Amino acid sequence: MASIIWRVEHFGEIDSTNTWLVARAKEDAPEGLVAYADFQSAGRGRLDRQWESPAGASLLCSILLRPHVEPDDLQLVVACVALSARAALVRLCGVRPMLKWPNDLVVGDAKIAGLLAEIVTGGDGLAVVGGIGVNLTNGGPPDVLATSVLEQSGVTITPVALLDILLDELEIRRPKLDTVEGRAELRDEYHRALATIGQLVRVELLQGAVNGVATSVDGSGRLVLDVDGAMMTLSAGDVVHVRSHGGGAA
Ligand code: BTN
Image 1: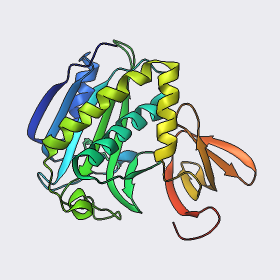
Image 2: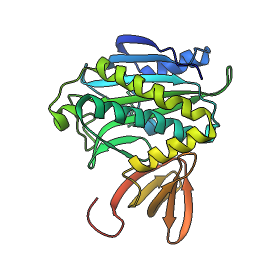
Image 3: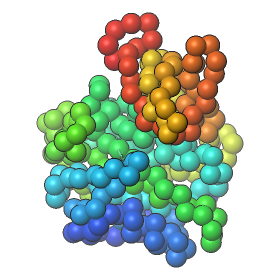
Image 4: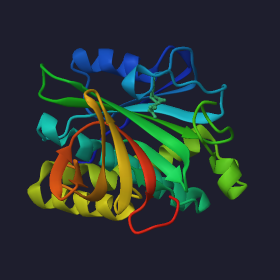
C-alpha cells in the first residue's frame, strides 16, 4: 500500500474522540484521519465503561484504519495499534509495557494504556476506529490498578509527542494487515509481547466465567485457552491474570 497520509484533528475538549471518528467513518472519511483531545467529557472504555482523565494527563486519540481484513480479524487490528503504542513508548522514554489480552498495555499488573476498537461497516468496506488512552502523568481511572509514563520513567512526555511517534510506528505495521505474510508477522510480534501467554486466567464472558491456561493467540489474534485439556478460542472477554502457570503470583 502507498504510505498513509495522516490528517490529525486536535480538540481542546470533546465528548469522545472515538464517537467523533466513528461518525466520520460512517461519512466515508479516508484511512489516516486521527482525532486527539486534551479532555473528553464522555470518554468511553470497553464494555460500556467510562474513561476519565484530567485535561492533558493522557494521550486520548482515535485513529481511522481501513485494513483489508475480515471482521473476525479485529483483534489483529487492535494488536497492530497496541504494538505501535508499545514501540513508541520504548522509543520515547524506555518504558516497555507488555500487552494484556485483549486490549490493555500493562507494566507488571498496572495498566498504562487501554484500547477501544470499533468496527464501522458499509460504504467503503470495513473501517476500524482504534481509540487509545495512554496515562502520561496520571494513573488513569481510579477503579483500576494503574500507572503512568511519568511514574515508570520519570519523563514527562506530551500527548502530541507520543502521538507523533505512535503514527510513525503504525506506518511500519499497518501495511502488514493487508497480506497473509504480514498478518503472520503481526501475530508473532503480538504473541511475544503478550503477558497473558502462560498465565492461568479467568475470562469473564457474557455467559459466565471460564478458567484456563492461556497457551497462544491464533492467526486472528484470538486467545487460545487450555480449559482442563480442551482448547477454547476466545474473540472477546475480560481477562484476569490469576497467576503464572506453574506457580507464583502474577
Ligand atoms: C479500555 O481500557 O477500556 C479502553 C479505553 C479507551 C480509551 C480511549 S481514550 C481515546 C478514545 N476515545 C474514547 O472515548 N475512548 C478511547
